[in-house]
Amino acid sequence: MNEKAFQEFYSEDFSHCYGCGTQNKEGYQIKSYWEGDESVSYFEPKPHHTSIPGFVYGGLIASLIDCHSTGTGAAALYDEEIKAGNKPEFYPRCVTASLLVNYLKPTPIDCVLELRAKVKELKGKKVIVSVNLFAKGEVTATGEVVVVRVPEGWKP
Image: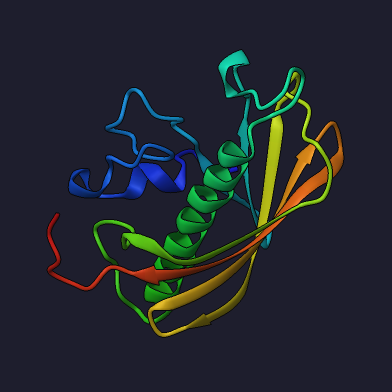
């Protein structure tokens, strides 16, 4: 894994997301890293992330897939900049254009969740990311996320 997570390469202006923002101390604080051609992230749900006793709330699963994918998209776009001979100061900030989550089976809450993503397509400012969410070694949810780069000069 890299020393620093993708999310640690965002500018401070774009680091407030509830799921992945390093500036949001109340948020999930997820961290994503390259591991070969996949990105990986781990998250340990808390008891208050429950839907029914023993299982993770589906909205948490969707937000983990969402934020891991935007981080993966940003890292992929950054890597393309490096290949083109550029050296941006920060990772580009990306937002979600489309989020599809398939819940395959109930996700147990008493374990660390593992997210593994691959870039399916990178074209211009758009990245399509596919994600598997694992609990206890089993895929319990999948996702496909269309991520787009925030335009240059855009300020929150």
